[in-house]
Image (tube, rainbow, N blue to C red; front, side, top):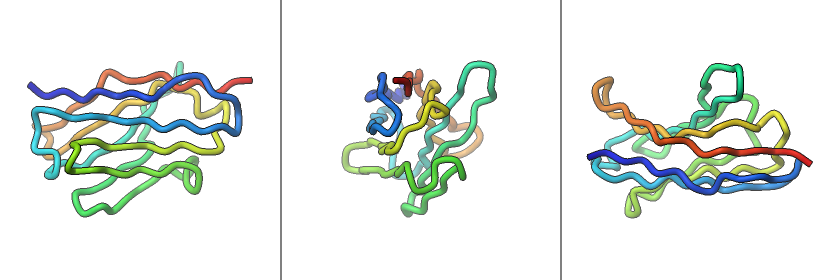
Length: 116
């Protein structure tokens, strides 16, 4: 049974930081491209950042220079370090693991709220 369990969300003031974690089980983690997506109310889900099996990273323009994605294959965990948070970063953040179209899994999401 595949499970992706996110943690680390919460309420933070503008300019603050949060670190999201996603622990995976039931998959060969090292074979999967890992990604973080987010969905704000009334908006489509969008890619925030991704990291390949060889540690190449990709970021949405809106988070470049503020967010950092990393992975620890020994711990089957992917992280999203978020700095200089803005109110527009408020969303539910989802972890994704993809190997093929038939091996594409999602976590349950964690709420990030940036507000004073």
